[in-house]
Length: 189
Image (cartoon, rainbow, N blue to C red; front, top):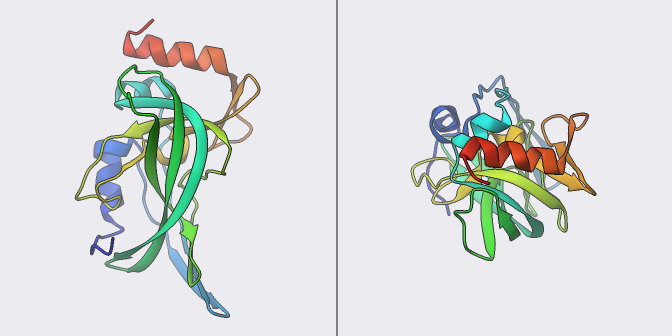
């Protein structure tokens, strides 16, 4: 998908759908052999679990099955995004009824380009995750794709019975307690 999309539109989207206030401090680009590497720096707001839960349609627990890099032509050049497919085990909001969901995140690598984003969540194949999903906004930088609400703030890795916050790996929470907070904030049992 080679739509001309402004990377700066992330800021507008952040306030509307992704629940992350981001601002870009700089963008660096270097060339290493035949690979162009660009880094996008920024900041984000640390929203609470309750804020993310109340402001998003889905809170998915599942396992990452596929990560596909996608080159997107933006107003400031080509950037690599990743389409992350997750096998859905449960939607804590009881609203998503498909077996898989795919979310788009900024960052990834193709044969010719690598984009590193310091505020986007990262995923690994076979990783068990819990993440908040922002609804599709076709005119956003994410195109007609779901994306992670709150960017890195809205994604947790699950290890045993602990949820590790992607934005701060030192912040862990008992998974059952986190699930209870999400359900309570949505008024679900």
